[in-house]
Length: 471
Image 1 (cartoon, rainbow, N blue to C red):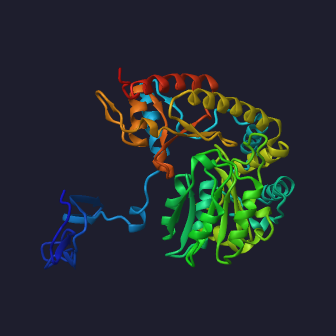
Image 2: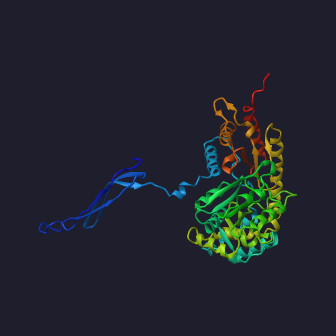
Image 3: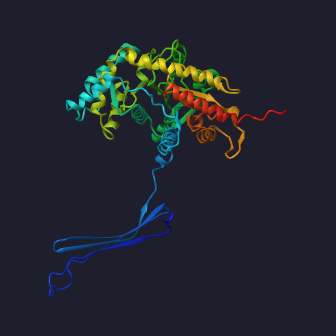
């Protein structure tokens, strides 16, 4: 296959021939010759050579195409987007497990708990009762009303159903929001560490991601003064995630109020508040919705999701939500009717998810405490104790620069993760995927027994990375 083709033109000819009617019929009436030419530039092309014969009663058509060159170029927009490392590592770990390798997978943020029975039954009942048709693009009125009730009671923000858009997961909700409000050349401000998809979503919208680093010594929280210094006339969206993926940091209300004061000075700046982990939070930390702050409702889009059911939503001013709905109507249309019934049941579990979520949070906290204690015993490791979600973002840069026989040099978070996968058979996500190469993300969405086994393997693998102590 040629990588490129350099030619001024090419011509292809198709001969379509039908059998003559009789010996005296004269020139073959079934002969047709079609020629076309095209000007080709230096694009990646794939060469095909095919012959196809189609036989029908009283007619035989032979189509020959030789050296048809197919343009394999991709959109510059797509080429600018990086694939998700979390998805790639999760897929790799799954493939190893299927091949019989006993890999412990702590890369994906997928809780090990089963869906609460009431939610599962609602989904089953939807199938039994034939609730398997298309719903309105924005979601069923029943679900949107339940979302409005939840946001009012738990978050202190008021919406009407036409200010809610239900989608196939929060990832779709957030992407559509960025696409709806950003123009080419706009800037999307993203504090780092960040969820891997935020910068790529900005690029898909032809916007420019502007990354603001935060520091482990400050619990990875955005400094309002630094934010102020990064805002320009092109700034369009500030993305906040609290509790945070990947750090587990939770923004205290006081700090959010300071950020809101900065945002208020810039009429063009909107805030996309990713609050999908709001119920997984460890006291004394508390959750504050950015839209509940004075003057922020009008410029905030709030996202939430229900893991595993491909269900999420965005809430905000009707003008913006309707624009998101327009994109959705021309892409996926509405979310699954079955998942929406399950979503209504989930919102009916009680305040903050009721007892079912409370049990999960208790287990997550126990796992967090174990990890913080275990890794805190290692020399040179830095930890910011998570206040929410189920991720630990640990600074392992102390081990960079060491060499391992049979593997090579540990240069960064990616090579350390590869080493831990090869040597310890534990799948983790390198911090460079989240904008901080000093750290590695560990998901503690797995059982405590699994986490204990993983810690033992990681510690054993790290022993080989200790610098030699001079005698």
